[in-house]
Length: 233
Image (cartoon, rainbow, N blue to C red):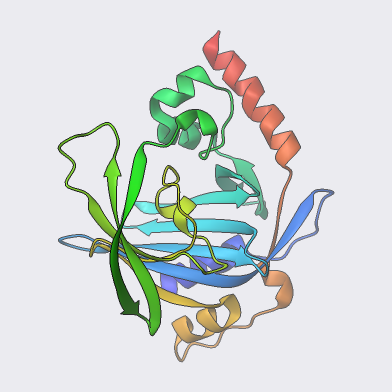
């Protein structure tokens, strides 16, 4: 856990800001993704109004970041010299979009051209997870008649929407508590408290500026599309 805290604090290290949009993180939502031999973690950092998010996926193979601004989500990275300025990751986007990459120069991972391949059916059941009620749905792929479906428990009344981070093609909104039994919500709290608790007895000095990052969406889109044109020639 200390390694994950160090990774997040490196991302949020203070520096002299350039002229671009700034965002301040205040909240964190954490999921555990279970497998047979180990667990990955999905840390979703958000602004106070839950409108902008930074998703950090931590795996034994490395850490990967996606930034959601308004309705768009981008695969991003930061350079060592400017760890709090995010840039669109061209190769990462290419890998995540798959065949969609071939037909659009839009790097958004929530691009409408990807479509909605899933349907969600209410089961009429409810569960209590982390002392909160959530409603159980069965989700199916529209293009697979052999899909037996996967249960998902979600609070559709929550002002927090984690659906785009779990399945961007699912036409639901709300706070997901579990997907099957492999993706489970573990924590929802302020980022500052979460870092302090995760550090345990280790002393962590936290400044409000540690939670501010920057992203120049217009410039990054232009640079991505220029590189896209080069590779398509």
